[in-house]
Length: 434
Ligand code: URA
View 1 (cartoon, rainbow, N blue to C red):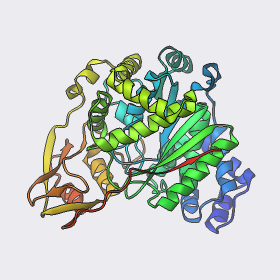
View 2 (cartoon, rainbow, N blue to C red):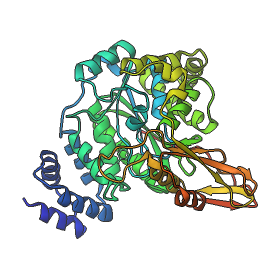
View 3 (cartoon, protein in one colour):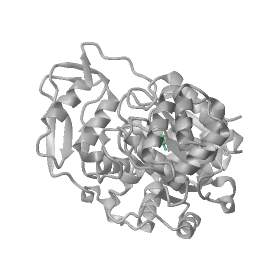
View 4 (tube, rainbow, N blue to C red):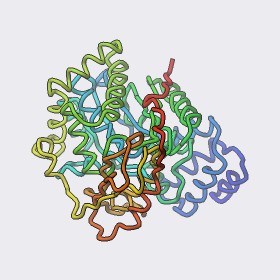
């Protein structure tokens, strides 16, 4: 088999055979297929798509590309979550300790920033000393001792996705349904949890912008999970406005700590509660009402915050950063963004805002580049807020000296209107395996 023929078939709109997909994933993982050929195939898939059978086969090939975690010692209490990617999405860092404090078992692998979206692993690295890699034994012992561990994609777990994820990030091939579904599900299946809650984002800050695309993605991932005998629930949530008031790694971690301590922005708290409730319902087999009560009490009693501290300490950081998040990385410079006019903010192009954060230093433009953990945006006004011309609508945190163009880009991402826009539901739809 030759890679050039596989690329040509997909370019011409043909379905790839199981053998072709296996050949590609094996060859790319072992290095015999180079980045330039894989990039061409990714772009062909981006244009031509993949049918359900190809997507399932791609997922299986990626799942089988490395080791798999065996969590069977923990029974059916293991539960994982994954977001399809958004701007200001720091939910994993909040939801996991809540669920673990309520008796769920969370053994999770997360990724780095991708495209205009941030990644949980980059965010957690804001906590000095936090180890994103653990040996298999240390990972499992930690889960057994405290019910929670979160690491990056370790050496040999879905290595195919690890390589593809980084390549897609710099070849404009992230926003493709089969590539997103296979990337997420191969990782979730290999990570071994019995139940999986997927946060499928829709709107201007999501990779797939429309409700229909989000629903198709949700259904595809739920079906793949079912074929592997896992309980899967996909919750479609709004990403037409950044989540919470901050975008950027250490800024988001400060906000995550606020939510764990019982305050923080309403939208973020609401989504975290829904995700945690679904995770507990599925993993502990309890009713929605029981799960809601447990989540509420874990936050109110401080159990969720304590679990968070226990978790970051066990992974090499220190509780002091949670007790006093001002000690997290802080930007050298802070610039104001002022409203150019009076009126209601009627829309925020959330992808463009994610790109602004990335340009400030929070994201990557080339594979494996370092990022500035302190860079990002604090939004003081969001969609539906009324502003007067000259009011401060955001602060840009960065080590850059000149951010004139980024300020213009941020302002261009907003629309203003004399009329207050209607509210959108945050939780849009749910797809469950039956
Ligand atoms: N998250 C992933 O893990 N993979 C994607 O492709 C998109 C979001």
